[in-house]
Length: 148
Image 1: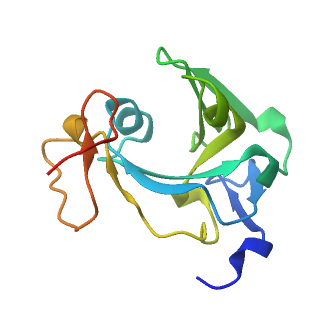
Image 2: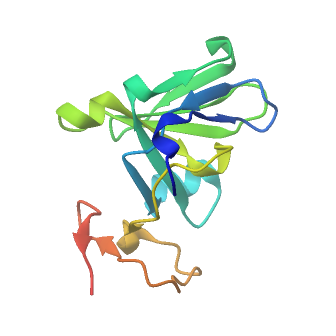
């Protein structure tokens, strides 16, 4: 994908009230099929890309951002005005997860500097959605155990 690591990418919610920028490459580029992601986005799965907090910045007024703390010890952030689901921050475990933010890739105006890695939490996927690509699939209790 070229020398994208030095170029910032921007993103926003549907109405533009929440804007952000990030510096690629991202940490990961995954498709999540867990039931919480599916419900929060109203979709069969959500594609996330993660950035270290130091490479990510909200560039609009934070007053337009609402945060929802889940029963899985995570925080989901969305726009107060249009309802776009934007960010996910996990507080499970320690270390890296607390130093990064996952961005719903559909809200990014550029590329994360990575290729898709795989499908996660496939044991929870929507029964009506067949996974037809050749990306690796992961499941089990943790959502990241290799599947056949």
